[in-house]
Length: 343
Ligand SMILES: Nc1ncnc2c1ncn2[C@@H]1O[C@H](COP(=O)(O)OP(=O)(O)OP(=O)(O)O)[C@@H](O)[C@H]1O
Ligand SMILES: [Mg+2]
Image (cartoon, rainbow, N blue to C red; front, side):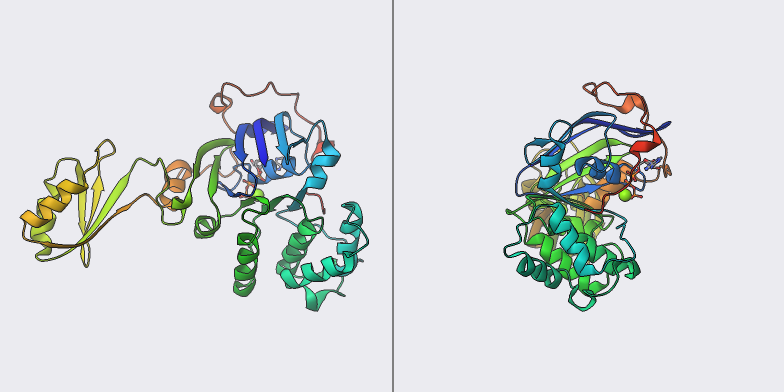
């Protein structure tokens, strides 16, 4: 599992995290979303021990990053946003190096690394110098490194950005296959990818959690708990006449005619309205073919919570921090801004 409570982080005068709390259960795949500069990478660096928090706590696989840093770091594999690689080591020796760091037993190690090369599509570049790899191959090596120690928790910062379409499909399948086996926290700007892979999403904006959603409904946009709701109906019969009847039903906000019927927006506080919609279709002479709910998509949710504010890297307003935010330590010096960890 992953648990962060009241996590804060300042970079000098910039408050990157203003009291972030969320939890990911064991075996879950969770998505961390947010606009550029929201704090996603900062959370991930703290969770993987490559950056110190200013306040609050972070835990992976039951280990506290502050009080058990070594055990915590062993339990988590990290694929950073920008994979830092030395110029003079081959892909294979980089993986061996990480295997040493993670304490992977020598017995069976070669087979394990060979398997990883195949899983991440690195077979053909195994002898190449890692520092000379293209962006996509660096990402793949970053993922392979994250997986070397067979960690129960994986943190993947934009794992598919910059990959070619074939690799994107492969890496998504690899991540999907981890469901139930590892706890995964991944960030991505590709919302359809998050919908398809994640059972849970946490949306950050300016260093604060602005939404948390979970459930299988993420994929079809039925993000649980979202207020705006639509019902999609299709019928045989006069389109305009039936649509006008639907618009008169109490609780209907708007009706948009589609090719096969209409999409009806329901007022936020309207209770179960579908029987009344069905009745009005029938009364207006339509023969109902289909009716189903359509919640706001993850994209709708994302845009409504974070969109159109134009705050590329604006510091979080201290007032936005939750009441239980842990008292912050003084701003850290540059020594802590270590950036990502190759392992
Ligand atoms: N080393 C640093 N020094 C100063 N400020 C930093 C540093 N790293 C990040 N920040 C600031 O912290 C905030 C959060 O940055 P972070 O990289 O965590 O965002 P992000 O959500 O990962 O964004 P992106 O989607 O662009 O990757 C931003 O305002 C950023 O400018
Ligand atoms: Mg980032």
